[in-house]
Image (cartoon, rainbow, N blue to C red; front, side):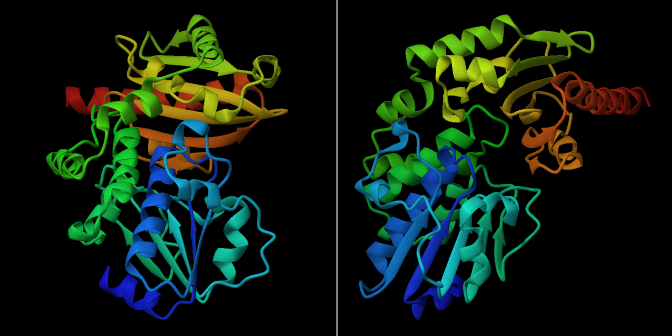
Length: 325
């Protein structure tokens, strides 16, 4: 943080960006850093956050109303900070600001991050980017609003502390944030578990239409664009579907794909066992973590599923051979 603060010390214009289709960790880390810097740097500077539209359940701060969702500002930033983005291409519409900034900083926890900043702080064994930020911040200077933002990232990237990326350190940090006054029970219910009627209907449909393949070791569900449009749903309404598929008994890997436009599918992959889904996602231009990854693939749903399951089957076969050896 000393090196990062050194860069920020003289920066009069600071930009912050997260990845496309922002999730809880992305939003939490952007809000946390923005609020922390505004609290602890002098007021004579501009600090802007760029994100795609934030789902209403994440509107936990007045600061969220100031988030910019277009790149029509005629400004070149002294410093631009990318958070929770595994690659520069994941910055979406704000990528041009990042490219033109005098200093580019990249803070992340994805194992697939290729270090696209001039200053890179990537801790790939952290549960979340918010956990990385907690270590960078002065704990005494974390107020309640910053604590809420950090806690949001922790609960969403760990699946409320049940994913394998949850560590003793993660739980200790969560405890320290709760001690700051974070309304943890309310935040978990309202941002993680709570669904509206349409979201429940879509989840039900995805579960009903899911299929088991690879002798029950893999579960797959597909949602086509015409069905998404029928419900009037947006990508944020599909949150949690992959996690519900993952907990199916006997399943090693879960696949959820939805059609974003004609013959283009967004793919989410989750693993329960030792299959490395980050490696599979990387083959198709994506990335993520060993047990949670994603990518975008062109083609028919049938061909995409065949290509993905071939890779999963290959890993399962190799794991079986290694175990027998």
